[in-house]
Length: 289
Image 1 (tube, rainbow, N blue to C red):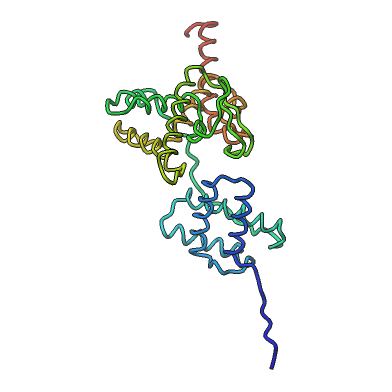
Image 2: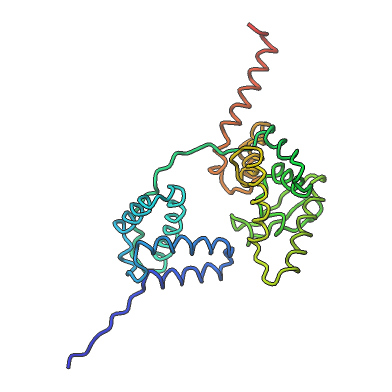
């Protein structure tokens, strides 16, 4: 009788589970790992979960892109999953699970300028009679500082500096945000409400708490007739920094970006501001002609 030789190989699903477990031990935020899981649930709905890693090649990834477009998924949503896949495959290459990361491109998208909330629209939100004062102050805080939604809740106040630990920072580097004195009371109130909520519920999941603020803001936007999301408060802060003459390096420092790449989207506002300054200066020197 011939001996049956069983050949073991690392499947896509097993490798993904190993990667996610390692990311958790490396201190990657639970919310990020949750998004990674969602990305691979989508990917493995097309590329079989028991596939060999070597079968996750350019052709298979191209097929995934094609199927997702046929299903009506947005380019932005597909690209989020593709970026997760690329990060995973590069890890596989470093671990010698694959010899080389297969080449694939992102789905082409139209690059829209960041949306911000105009003064008039924001004033309309502030006038909503049914909106609790706490939320009005919170929205003003986020619009004035450019903080991410979670940062006031996970940060520690030291004087007027809000310190965000590296494990909660998107860049994985400790972040320090210099606040105005007027911002301190609302930060303390946000933190107090979070602590009260944690002690009140049986299984506190941070996402459920912070979602209350994003959902409330979305409701306010619908009420005043604009299509905006909570993160646009951060875009608004960056836009106003640019329009008030802040350099891209200064905006990157305030927002916590390690490179200027992410803040180049605001450069047109800075250029408009510079053009306006030059125009006014020329008027003073030469007068209106």
